[in-house]
Length: 342
Image (tube, rainbow, N blue to C red; front, side, top):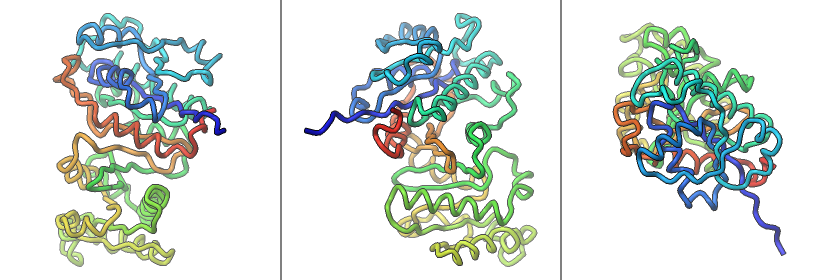
């Protein structure tokens, strides 16, 4: 007789307390659809979840554990749980929709705790809620986003952001930087790293050899030097050639304005993009509510929602939890074995 299947514990960070993250986490904790996928553990402040649940009339019946209790018994957690980080000195002072250094610091504390738990093996993966970059900066946190935090804190040698949905998958050579900084951050090794990380993901998840498209940087992919400073010839094409020599099926650099046409999407597993909006715009246009952010190259599994804190609708019962649901579903699917967090 087969032993009962052990579900993996998945950390879900609450995100910025002043945004829609608390509402989304409450909906995750109360959704029975996860009972066959994982055991969600929300890393946040229970006091905020209580306030939001009362305001919106949402159930909040998950068990709450302190950091000390978690340290003593994390591996015994087998039902929806809140790890009460107590990152806010004055939870009652939090106002929904307001950018605040205290909520930025709290959001960062949830991320730190979740990463450490994943590295220790207390949880099998991390799905992150939305953070507010201005609040992080006000708190003195200089990382531009989750990807950079996870890369440094886990000691990953190379990593990149990927957004994926049923219609489109994009990975990124650069992400949260101004356009004037993009060229300085591009190099043949960097573009090749992103191609290889993307190819590895497609092999693991879709179980076939990847078909990749690499976008150019400039209009018309530079049109042989007419636009830009031959970045395509100097930085992108050599990486594509190296990937081909390594046996990968890679096309590029292709003009970005035609890269995502339906016919090309049908024959492409993933697109390697040079900067943030190059891939975010088409993907969010196609699937804003169901896309998932994945950090490739980490020693742990990390996924995320593909949206921000939506301060304008925070604590109003209007947040759509679908992206977080998808992030958790993908994270559970990426966990090597169901009992890996044991």
